[in-house]
Length: 333
Image 1: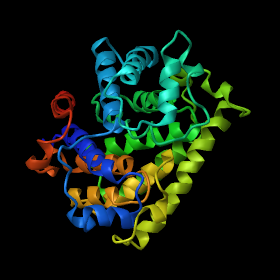
Image 2: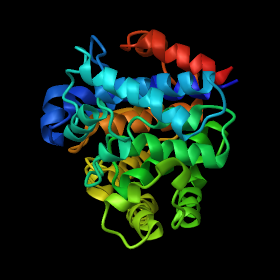
Image 3: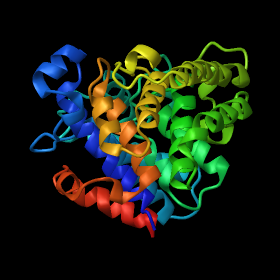
């Protein structure tokens, strides 16, 4: 077995750690700090950001929910909400977390319905950077996977583009884990986006759409899928004339927002689908949200190539290694 779940979770954390020191820097500053991008070394110690912390929080929440029975909306929302609130109060939550997550988690720490905590104006990448576990858990139906991906996003980031990008990210991870060829991945994602463009998962999202200003739930969710389809077009154009030495952010965006984080991470992965460390280094040497771009690129590469993608001297040094391996082993079993 290639151990896709272990590969994806370790790759996500490695990309996060590699991109942590380069976030908020432009490419010339990164090169001055780190040297040639193709030779970037994993920092020592290999400390991660809130991206990995929230991925683990989501993973623990999913594990708890599935230990209790068939995965459904209330069964998932409760433990994930609790995990997010625990992360919010943790002394280890000191890695420059996004404002949307902080505001939403503070509101989740109450008796209010989660829809009233969700930040509907935010499509930051904080929801899809952590969604990989949804694509790795075995045994879910398509409806469960899409609903879970969007619900975990909506707990903090309620913008329809955040929902759609999280759904697409989990779907990409699942496709790669199941053996989809990287060359056909973007086409599969575009087809998925078209098929789901008007599908509002009311069972999972409840009345979330009514907190926005759209005429119908279909209008609400279509806004998100349309923005994702637009950035997938930009990704397709970039892959027609690949330029590995050019900052990927120039083609598909800086990654601070959900759809651009997905597209730019995919671009880094698809430039080097069989060279996982090169993909991570390219993602970390970008002018945008380097840690989130690199963590998603690592999840894609690890889902595609499995645990063997990562050299032991890197994987053994990553923060939260024991918990990452435990979740990976559970879902690879």
